[in-house]
Image (cartoon, rainbow, N blue to C red; front, side, top):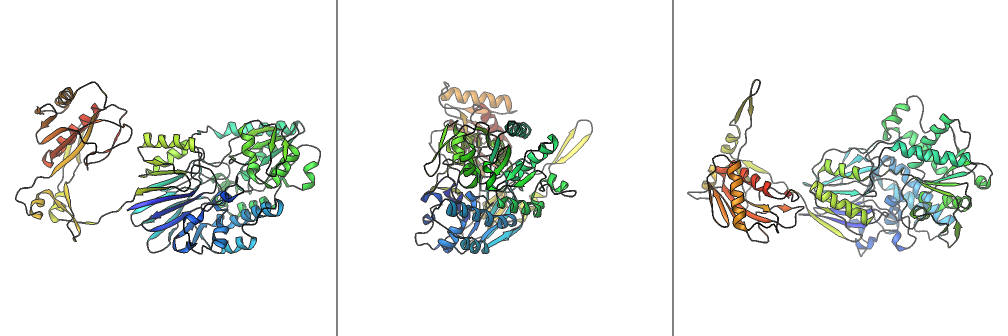
Length: 624
């Protein structure tokens, strides 16, 4: 059976994360976000692609939201209260607590201040959150008789989780946004080693490799200090939850050490509420914060005050954290309009800004003017400072997680296409794992795992119990038991599968003589090399003679034979005994077969022939 991964959002883009995965008949929606850079119909995923009739309860088994950022939860009230989905919704306890704050803050900014169309109301948010089932880390949830889910710590922001989902023998992990390194207030992502058919990973920083955070922190602090020391105002646009707490801890500590008296402000009452939740949810923070919490709460900032709007035009230096991040709307954009024209001032952008936002325009170059959403132009004479304080993992982190989990397939989402394609090639070539980069509206289908339960015959079990002792004598005698047992899997129609000893096969098949043989179509030379076929057979024979002791080789123009082992040049475009070739598009193949009596000899010869192949041609595959 297949696993279908249908990308409704965040396909070759960053924004409106929404991936619908079908596993053995169960359909799970991972995240239900909105695009922060769009103000038209592209803001939300196109839910009509799931059901033309609007009967979403019968097409979606459940929704799992990984964290409270708007590009992951922003469309949820619309989907439940306007589109009519009433099925189960899962998220972590912190995400359930903080999501309504973020949703209401966004609604207020977009509708009350910018006058945009109200797509969901305060009542919608309240009713939506009543449907949410909160889950703990590593808590296994049985959604129904077949579907099982489990959440793992993702770092990134308070309450963020990766999600493991399993139906039958098929299993996947959807990462959401995650961070593989510890920062000041959150720990690194943690997950068990799992057997996976598919890993769906974010790829925001698909080609970025970050060095130590300390030079970046020092650069940020120096830029802010230089601005306020020169009488300027420093604006730090950030979302109320996540980077705001990280940077406040950094600045508060620096202000204490340097005895700086310039005020630091928060613009949003939302951030005050957020800090209260951070104090309550210490168990979701980093080990460093947990240890400090025994003596004082690290989120009780000594130098940070609440901001009043009247202070926008007040004289003198200050530092202001204003929401939202990316300068996409709201108070941060309002302050930017007033402070950007002064060369004394600074705008520090601490994370990623999606395309279409003012933050992205500032990061893309050094504009002297910026067009705002309503057509207003703003002169930009202030300093622009971008520093990588993003809570997303970098390319090394994505590779490390993929290598650790070793899934059979990878799908990349939540990234920019050029960088994603580079990372895709890296995963394919270095880890030998098929990788896909679907666009919005596209579906990737991969094979799912099915385990077959089999009985074992008495003779096979007896063969397993026979010791295979190996003796070695370096400094002292060592005895090891390297037992292996060769069996044959027999699947008869309407009967349960059974593993039998090789001598039993003839009786089962009602044949007097039966030889168990193995087959493998082995790549032996890259196409285009100058050697002809006769020279190739002679070359392989010479290497086998040199490596395999006592080998007696019989060769002809297109084949060679050693005992029961026989290899012939394979001219077929597709051979049922041929493995996948991951990094070498073309090769010359030798189709080999040998009896089970020469099991070790056969594989020894195969390994010799593989060494003949160019090192750039990597082989992936087992006996077929």
